[in-house]
Amino acid sequence: MVIKILATLGPSSLNENTVKKLTESGVWLFRINLSHTPLENVEEVIKKIQSWTDVPICLDSEGAQIRNQNMISENVKYTSGDVITVHHNFVVGDSHNISFTPDNVSDQLKVGDKIRVDFNSVHLQIIEDKGDCLLATVLRGGYVGSNKAADVDCHINLDAVTPKDEAAFEIGLKMGIKDFSLSFTNSAEDVKVVRNIIGNNTNLISKIESIKGVLNLGEILPVVDQILIDRGDLSREVAIEKIPFIQRRIISQARSQETPVFVATNLLESMVKVSSPTRAEVNDVASTLLMGASGLVLAAETAIGEYPVNSVRMINSIIKQFNRWTPESSCKDIIF
Image (cartoon, rainbow, N blue to C red; front, top):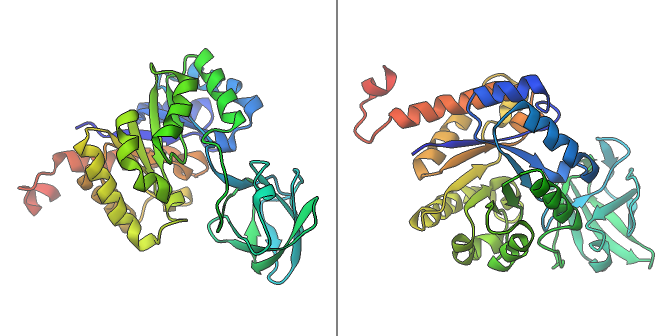
């Protein structure tokens, strides 16, 4: 089986030299994360990538996800015990003000609801509804930058695709894009919404990154081309020690229906800052391949990391070892 590599492009890699090196290193698909790409930049970004490489591009939707909006800096401090304002309309956030997207999120919050921002970096609790805004107390202080994922402890109605997703997908279709990814796929109905936009002659990857998505996997698998396990967002809803076992079960279920499955998040996280991975990371990647994953996804490693090309080369080195290995391989066979 050919193991495929999906690499996310971002500030560290969205240039001709790096894209060409990543292409030479064996990237199968380049991902554009719409959560971090303004709609007005989508067409220009696609044009640049298409001029640099023949590797296909995948547009990855924002999907049914809550995020805070732009902040005055990338390290805004929130102090425990402070009272801040949660605005219904967009504001540039600071230590006493914040707003969220989609725009209807704050309208659905009520007194007592809790908000966790950026993987539990900051905890807020709504204490008063003032009509035109909400007041919240900071339960856990910390630092928050722009456009960070958030989740709440109550039910929030979210559309499967945002207006921005739909507009970006339509741009992509006009420019020949054939690969699309649906973030936070929770049901087969979510898939139908996207199919109505992109049609049936495209490749759709459904990202499984919520409890709903995991529990509804049986209805999702028959209607998509591939799935992608996003371990990061999934760990916001599921205890981290359970993630490896859920990953194993999802891969097994997908393989039983001959649906290819990618695995993402923290594969080589240390290589965002250093030139080589930890032994634990290498073991994680190898274990994921041994579980039966069809492909691996690099996100921060190639989008914002200091060693995007080395990260892909390291993944390829592990894949090479995996392809050499058999259950009958001796230690001598492996070493030499």
